[in-house]
Length: 120
Image (cartoon, rainbow, N blue to C red; front, top):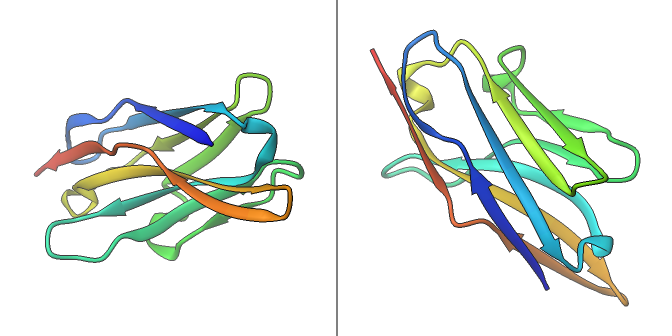
């Protein structure tokens, strides 16, 4: 089992910045990748960015490229999302995600979600 706790989020004006962090605990040795998703009202949950735990390879969806940066701390098992140039369209609940593989069994874990609201 992996537990994920998110920090950050809140209200910011358009053009501003926020930093989200997610701390993993439990079977962290099983984590293969972590990422950030978001879900706006009436929309499906979408993947924003991800990072592999061993090699640090990153992925960004087109809508956040150049504005968001994902980073990981292998020692403290945290992953962060630095969000710059925020737009009202970025308003959503943001979720931390972890993919884990332990003893041949793959699992997906989610944080509780944190609200990000960008005002115009």
